[in-house]
Length: 134
Picture 1 (cartoon, one colour):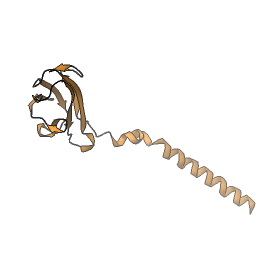
Picture 2 (tube, rainbow, N blue to C red):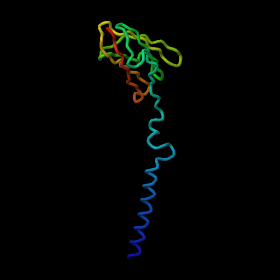
Picture 3 (cartoon, one colour):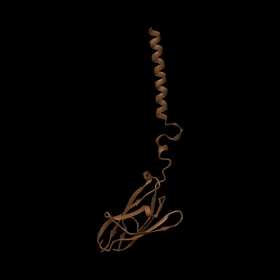
Picture 4 (cartoon, one colour):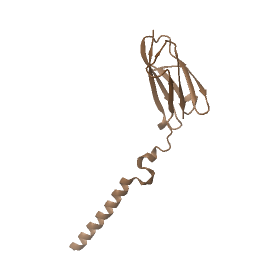
């Protein structure tokens, strides 16, 4: 009876350790990163003027977006107010241009960008700061 009990315990331990090692391994797909493999995040770059540069009221700004779902899916705001922008298709990216509102003077503002991708988990919400002169 005791030999049977010891044998059962050894088999159970051997089985549970192999299951444990398999659950921790993640397979050959790289574990949790396999969920993100289909995500191409919308990329926002080439901010002009650069971060924390000084710009005149009504001054122009621009940036590029790639991996977006299209021009209608790129939105710009300053202090939660929508900003009108032009979006030019350059084949591999979009060139986005806009102007600061004239009433912004002598302050630092954030140009907030929302670029929607084909997969909503890959959207990019970003922005940069500009100092507005008098």
